[in-house]
Picture 1 (cartoon, rainbow, N blue to C red):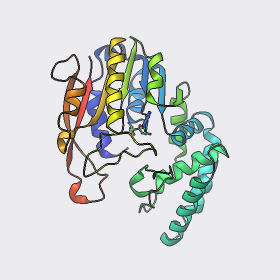
Picture 2: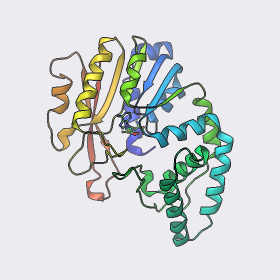
Picture 3: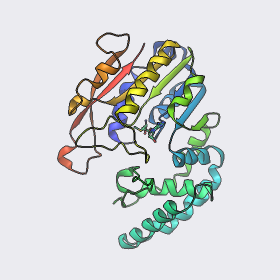
Length: 289
Ligand SMILES: C[S@@+](CC[C@H](N)C(=O)[O-])C[C@H]1O[C@@H](n2cnc3c(N)ncnc32)[C@H](O)[C@@H]1O
């Protein structure tokens, strides 16, 4: 988890609904834009989560979580092979190895060997530039090799721990909206959608379809729907006041009228290639409790 994400998790932690803190328990937890799952793993370390729904539209991501959940030992074996093949090499040899794995990952079907594919996904994440996940318009992973000297490719203890935490969760590969039917008054929903595209830095292509303005508006309707069901939700997004589309969130979440509340926080981002553009950025947290 990057430093920027850690800062966000800390602030989200201070905004958790009171009854969760008092009961040390979450009846039903939903995180339908799972990504790296930073908030889920943090909450699972603090609270007893009775039911968890973790979803993402990215097939390879969910396939990887599934492999960690169901077959940690087989996955560790595959990752160890990749780690042993990569680490002893010189930088030029590592480059060749990395692009070979990336090509194989991009050119084989996800149905071929799921454990192997999950191991390639973790390998690429650990060895690529800044641990980024980004695909081109054809859905091919296109992040170049990173410069880590000694990346921890096969973190056995962590994989076993994560497998245990994921043991009873429901993993879903689908659009976030498919969670709606299950969400009720006992639910806490954390939403971390791809950011509203900001001019200078638009890392929103987690999948080939992208998540644009239209999808952001649909998401605001989703939040209104689950609010009507008396679920509690917390949504994070980048504050567009950094650049453009000034009143997007105020308008679509009726933030000047209520009942939703919001907070702006300052976080430091490090995903811009240009060091001069890695300064503080505002993050917006919207919630209904
Ligand atoms: C900002 S990231 C989430 C980051 C995550 N909270 C973390 O800690 O790493 C957004 C995630 O939403 C997923 N996503 C994009 N469009 C989606 C959709 N329509 N439904 C569900 N997930 C989607 C992406 O694949 C990506 O993993």
